Length: 111
Length: 113
Image 1 (tube, one colour):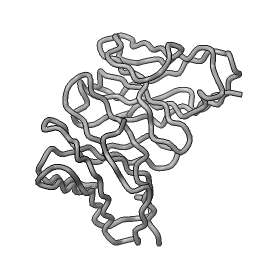
Image 2 (spheres, chains in turn red, cyan; image 1 turned 60 degrees about the horizontal axis):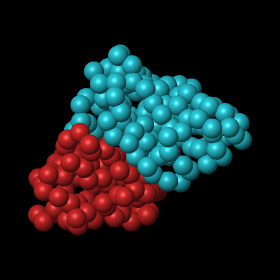
Image 3 (cartoon, rainbow over the protein chains, first blue to last red; image 1 turned 90 degrees about the horizontal axis):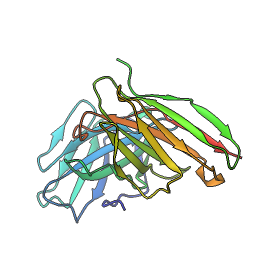
Image 4 (cartoon, rainbow over the protein chains, first blue to last red; image 1 turned 180 degrees about the vertical axis):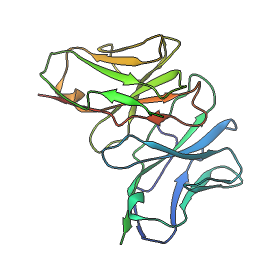
């Protein structure tokens, strides 16, 4: 079972920041927070991951709370092409682990 | 650099038949994982292959089997197809444990009639 809780859907205006929340209150000390997204009819795409520090790459920023029980994925300037299902996953870094996908958050970016 | 390649893209089979789906991982990746995604749901883990062996398996019956070849490519076989096996089958590859995430293919859409 997925170890995360996400809202089923969110809307965001084009050009504005999209902030997608994720709760992972049972996360273990050696587990990382990963984010993927899936655009319609495509396979999931890796976005970003982190352990406890905030992370940023060319796609997004990941903010993890100090107690690590929740996180927020930030798309700074959402475009229509960011419309997708976003998945938050926690996973350790060793064999025997895989990515367990929940239902995710369906983000709709509106013009 | 080609990413993960899956074939065929679409497939229609009859109940009771057998099907083989193929996956070529991204260059440099040695681990292949397979997922099943039913309509409107998140991907569900089937199994993972590394060094030509099944390393872990999700909650899928023995009708689902796989293979990994020395060149790291992989096959997913499903026997005695059921209507409920209709889904998008996704292959993902990674170097090692996948610490930097998996690279997914676009999937094979299987329809069982």
